[in-house]
Length: 118
Image (cartoon, rainbow, N blue to C red):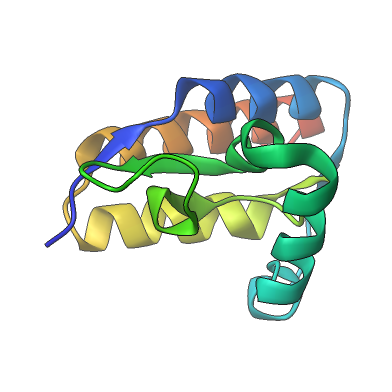
């Protein structure tokens, strides 16, 4: 099973977006999560560093500057999606990637506080 480290740049990016109210509270994550075509277009425009900011996990032992290196996408490459953070919490929890799970959970709580969800 792959192992993941938390991507601190992605956590900071998500927090900045949440603070700037660049989030979506209600979405169907299966319908809005970025697909390969939109990821490729984003990567072409923003490079690996910009692309990597959208993934809470970094696959250990994967080569740098590969899509395999990035896991646990949380937004649509423009805004944070609450449903994306929930998916990250769920997937990381399911596969026992505790550090990624907790990072996603903390971001979800921050989004909920910012949005006034109590």
